[in-house]
Image 1 (cartoon, rainbow, N blue to C red):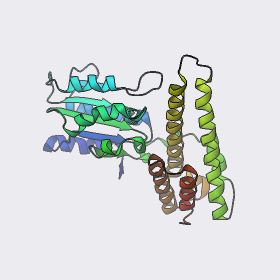
Image 2: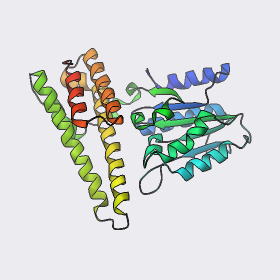
Image 3: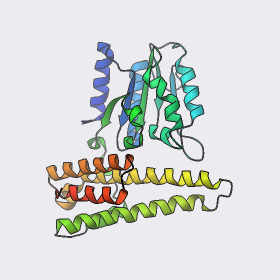
Image 4: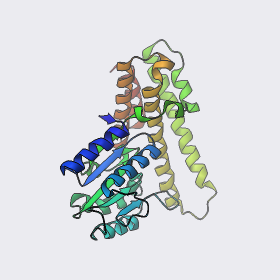
Length: 284
């Protein structure tokens, strides 16, 4: 169930007061800046001070050319977490854009799995992810998940991407509309792959197999982002734009969540998209 950020902070404060804190939390939501603010706010509640420059606060961000989280980063974080806190009751670690641990064969995620299974004493681990479907199931299962709802986003800050406009093209037949929307999504994904390939086309420093892996990783991230854009648009604007009733809107968001899950399980993309679009129309 999605919550507003203030509701999540209040629930977190109650858990601290009652001594019912978990060891690991997965914070999910549609916007990276909202998740970052939430994670830093929760860390401040635990540390009872600003996380900035606090000796018991540690963070991991994607780095390197591939914008991935590396095994070396996770090893260093583990080393820090196994030390006792300096001044606070707990050490707090935040892994931002945690799905990027799962790039390149998920070696960084696997390297950190043992720490999530048996966290060191006196530690709290927060993971943020706008694309939780890309996380390993073993990572998700070891965290308490807190979802930051779309309603926490300022509607005035939401801009319609150009590629979404054909999604609302007039088509009275729901079956034809579903297949037309599937084609819109496939065309957009083809553009994402072409853009990812063009970024590395003239970079002779990157080996061919590494380049292919980087293109595939960026394509998958872009594909997940496009689904999130559609979910956001249904949640925030579809009622005004397309006359979509609330139940229809919720059905669409859930159908797109199902599409994310199907793609994460390597289902055939064309079939998964067509099924999701038919489900949005209430035809399956």
